[in-house]
Amino acid sequence: MIGGTARFFGSVIWTGIRYGVHWKPRVFLSWGIYLLWITLIIFGPRWNLSVLLQFAGSIVGWGGFGAWMGAHVPRLVQLFVFFVLPLCGWLFAHGIRTWIGLKKYQRSIDHLGLKTPTGVTPKVVRVVELENKQRRVLVHAVGLDVAQFRDKKGVLESSFNAIVQEVRVTPSNRQMVEILVSDRELPTLVRFDSHAEALRKPYTFLVGETVDGFITADLCEIHHLLIAGATGGGKSVFFKQALVGLLKSSDHVQLYLLDLKRGVEFRVFGTLKNVRVSKDEATAISMLQRVVEEMERRFRFLEEKGFTEIVPERDGLDRIVVAVDEASVLFTVGKMSKESKAAAEGARELTDKIAKLGRAAGIHLILATQKVVKETIDTRVQTNINAKMCFRVNTIASSMTVLGNKKAADLPDIKGRGIWSVGSNDLVVQVPYLDSDEINEEVSGLTAKFNGEASPLKQKMLQTMAPKKKRSKSNTMSQEEIEQFEAEENQDVD
Ligand SMILES: Nc1ncnc2c1ncn2[C@@H]1O[C@H](COP(=O)(O)OP(=O)(O)OP(=O)(O)O)[C@@H](O)[C@H]1O
Ligand SMILES: [Mg+2]
Image (cartoon, rainbow, N blue to C red; front, top):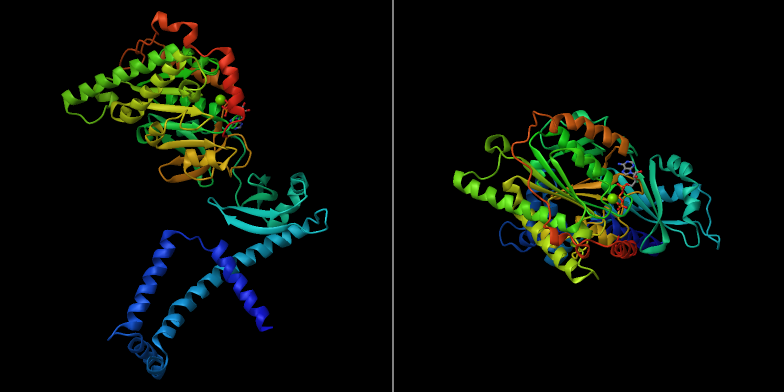
């Protein structure tokens, strides 16, 4: 009986240590300070524990207890009573909370009536609290197909009394099934035109719906943006809606689009007079060079005038946005030809310069990429990009590379669902969707603004044609190289 009780207490405390308590530095610090304080007053010469207990006890008429404790209980035992016991109590409280949570979810799993081939009911081993009112329930289910859980989604939702967002096999342990549960569901489709009125401030674009409402972003505040995620997650759609948003909300903006993988995604934007689209590497590099030259010219201007940053309305200059879809194509130094390698290096250096210095010069970078490894998006570039939109990735490592945490690997498999990360603040969002017909419509609406006589542009577009000799075939990615790149990409990190 006593052994059983001790085992129960021990196992709850152990659960508290393993799951209930997040061993953050703050927790260690708090207990460290408490230990120091308790040691000081127990071993302290004057204001020791006995005196304090006598004082506290006298208020409730138990003054004698403090005196007795001071006189009869060794100081080491006092230390144990006043430090170790509260610590165990605290761990027990966390453990019991976790234990009750596990029992609750276990009952729900029992309701499913599933059994492993050996007749065992799947066991809930852990419930992880996530941000935005989400929880991940880990179930040990050897020999059971994840589809058997998916088929019972309705039963799970009614017994959890919450929304089941996703059921999948844990990537690192095939015997485990993960159930993502949420108290509030984000919509799976958010239409661009339902939120277009949020584009009131210049240089803003739509980000998406969060559990706390719809959010937008201001390019002047975030400066640069990285869009990442596995294939088909919604990078290009987000990219295009962000560009449409920027063009709709702003007047003094020039857009330089580098779309090297296919050259078709952004073709529609090319009809606008304030947009240049480059489809080959040589033109892309020439574009980057002109932008860097313009940046240097702007720095000279700022120095002459004694200003700290470009203000288009005051300085008669436009904000410049350099947007690269499939940035990894431009920067990959893979098994390509010598010229391509040199071109990739050049492009990386120019982009690095823009990422580092562009903000004061009113020059902004938007990079979208499927592959985020240091060979594609230089870590130097990454450290200068504060805002990130990361769609679902397939491995924890990929999520760590982009966000520094595994949140993008935990996302449900919903198109357009991503993590919006600015600084250390991460939010789960459903980003706005607009199809190619809607983009065509939006762009033709914008032609009246930018292509007409009264164009709001403050300066001429930069001359970005590549020198003739550099436009040779060897300097563009050949079909063979694209195919090789795509094959590598599919078996790569994400
Ligand atoms: N916000 C969204 N809402 C709903 N569906 C979306 C959304 N974004 C993308 N999709 C759907 O997902 C498909 C793929 O999106 P998209 O082309 O943007 O992916 P991607 O991440 O750029 O993929 P790749 O890496 O292959 O270029 C779209 O054709 C569309 O059907
Ligand atoms: Mg894409």
